[in-house]
Image (cartoon, rainbow, N blue to C red):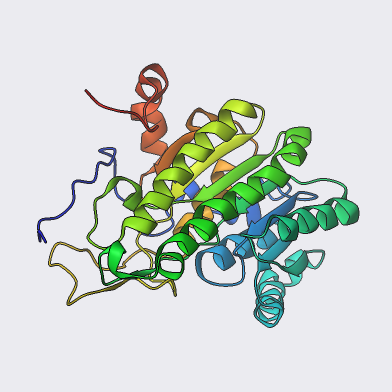
Length: 304
């Protein structure tokens, strides 16, 4: 197996690893834009730990009503308590609803969205973050065809599809936003990672269709950065020398997503496209917006 690094394309903008001024959440927390997310209802699937937890926490600190979803109620209850403690006295009205559900089960997600609409009457943002990485330690024919391969499809593709299927009709009513958390693995050929890479490639394509079929809903696929999470990425032997360390903060994708979904319309030109939280959004807008739109960049296509 080749030890050469995979070819991964990025926009030539400043590579960010933590929150920076252009996406600072502080104006939404207590500054001039502190009313932006007030009375907004946010659903975060995969919101009890890691990246999803950070996203949910940022929305709560911005005054939104947040629904967090994951498989285990005890983990959700712990996350809810932490989020409420982090909102502080300045956000005493923050509300968090914790609902246990399996994102790969359409009935579970149908019930989650139904409960949200019954309780709050509307939905403004849906984040599909739940995912699993699989064990990157063998060729796909050497593993179990379900547990080592297809299960990853069910969580990483069917899960976001289920969220989109039931959330999009509600988001269309509010002119809301749909965000799917993807990975740069979608464009890289990584040894023993076929299930994960294929799932993220399919996810990008799904979001292109959500933007096409629901044009009034902002739809984004985002690489959150290289962040150490609990999703296993085991390999046979040591990691290759070219592989970078997990050096990005959990707050980076949270702040980026908050900015993308603030309703200002500033970054709507990225709807239906793939982007990375590592890309400096201000530079993307200033230096690349016209070319992205004119050439229909950051979407899936053959190059000949």
